[in-house]
Every structure is written in C-alpha cells, then in structure tokens.
Image (tube, rainbow, N blue to C red; front, side, top):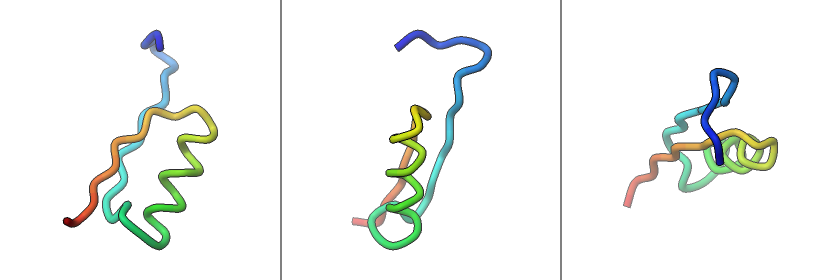
Length: 40
C-alpha cells in the first residue's frame, strides 16, 4: 500500500471485543489503516 497525504489512519483501543472490534472491522473494510489495541 502506498502512503500518501490522503491516507487515512485510525488507532482504536479496546479492539478485542464489542464496539472496539466492530469499529476496527468497519474502518478496515472501508480501506483505512487500522492500529488496534486489545487486552490480553
């Protein structure tokens, strides 16, 4: 993937379940670069 000035990036915490997980999947599906954090 080429990084440009218009590349969209999002960081999501709580992505192991619930709203955080669904938000991460939605952004990824729309082509965003997703950095997701989750508790182990």
